Image (cartoon, rainbow, N blue to C red; front, side, top):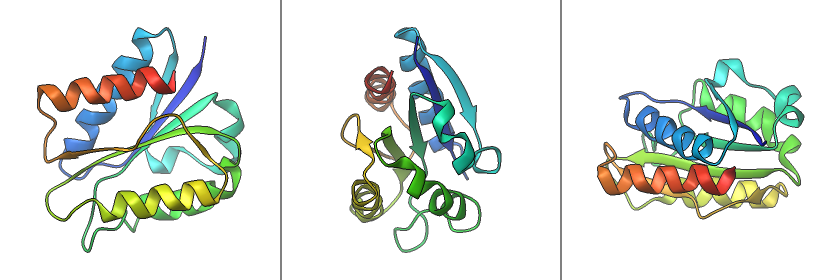
Length: 140
């Protein structure tokens, strides 16, 4: 049974809804799942999990949330080499630049993406929820 961490930050609840659907998908494949905030996760915990899904919405000028999520992720990034991960997040504007940049930084650190990153415009609709569940299944 896979041990999966889902580490996310959500300001409006949209990315939280995505994280919950990712967790449902992973659990449907039999995984043990921990939903964690950036404050509850650090580089010292990476090895405890078979895979990690990270979720963060686009903020400001299409960047990761800068006060809580980005500092945690910067600290964790060196520990992700060879680790199976997935990326997801919501946005309200732009074209997904924040996710492309995030994906490139993960690949540059040697992380192994289990599936294509997932972005959903605003709150996930039924199709978005299904995509989140599929991401959870892929990471499990």
